[in-house]
Image 1 (cartoon, one colour):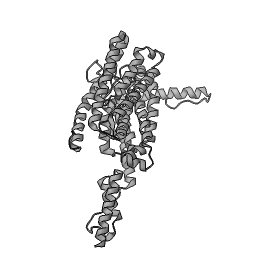
Image 2 (image 1 turned 90 degrees about the horizontal axis):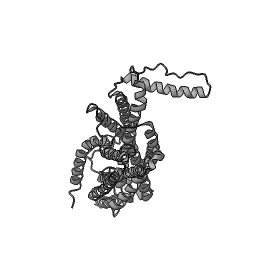
Image 3 (image 1 turned 135 degrees about the horizontal axis):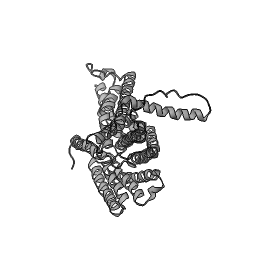
Length: 416
């Protein structure tokens, strides 16, 4: 009789603790089982075997390795596909030949007298094949990977910060806010000082919009799905009105660029664009990876995260800057490419789980792969035409967003 009473007391205490700290039902059951004496546990209960760390590490390496190999193969195929076809081995040979020239330049600079080892790599048979690859195809492929990695990771971070599965840069208006910043640089003529100015303005626009969405959508320490979606609708309406105003007052050249912004495209990508946004991507990914463990703790709830030593507000402010950096890198020279940050993290969570230490690098690789495939389709679906990249990603992401919205509503038992 005393054992039963103590068991009930322990169960109620553990349930209260779990409710206070935001723990799940599974965690509560496990805690109760651990605190109960052996005589009070059910004799027929099955014990769950703990996951094998080595097996989990092997699976993680296989996932990241598989995504990396798929991305490398797709990059080679994309670089060789187009009006001027280049065989995959010739694409690889051109990369090695370019690396050989770069390495040989450094060897000659230091006067070593050595010869770089990749001089015998096969080159394209077409007379302009090598030049086309390095001046047109390679920068476009690299920029596609940068944009995909930036947008997918920004979506992952936003979902972790807002605690909301529907948080995504294009959905809540952050991408269009960054586009307004870049459009401001173009219309005012500030962009004439260098492409890096456009990237900085895109970062500033994304930062202001992210802070606005964060302040408007949160209430009583949480972000409701309906509030977030409605905030995104309002922000998108305002930012697109700003872009429309800029389009009306701009000169013909700037007007063409602004129309390009609204469609989203990698047409015209160059190495200057790549090196202008690459620092934003590197800084954003570095900040996101540093905060991966804290984002996992934040998923337990603000109260639990604070008890575990996380400065929640500082973390959120840091991640808002991170999102602005990543979205600025994704939007600065391509325009609005939507739904990448929504589709990729959700698909990868099914495979790798919710832990950000694996989810973030997997999202970077998966986002790069998705945008690279979408750009390849944009260049090849219609002969002698370059379809807008943003249109293709919206065709993929729109139905996915509706499905996710319906599933979220069903899980929450409907919205008032």
